[in-house]
Image (cartoon, rainbow, N blue to C red; front, side, top):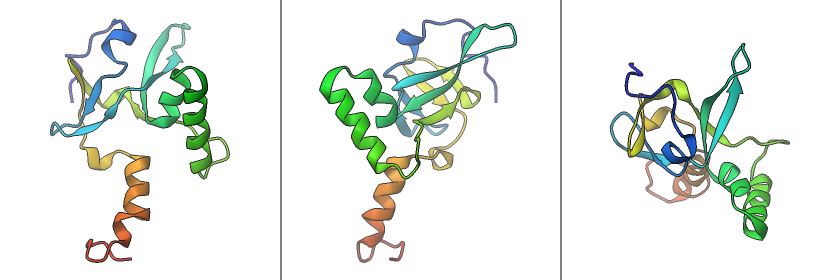
Length: 131
């Protein structure tokens, strides 16, 4: 994996937010809904992960709609204090009109997809997954 095509400095709002995330085979993964910021030893901020899904999008949306999205998302999560889904920057290989990953989508935890598969798809007779 090479990070040669990921710039050292970029305007995160313009370059990342709301961009499509695609895996190493060009398959869509999600959209970037928020960013996780961390600090290095000298106190300089850097982007440590891309956040996606309702847990990341809800707080960005103002007013009742954003609060409702966040509240519903929290109620559907089994954890006491759920965190938004995240993709570490270490697997980002390129940033252009989309954010490209160096890994396949099958290796990424997609909570909504997992829930739909477990609660709906697997229960359909003949879906090939068993009940």
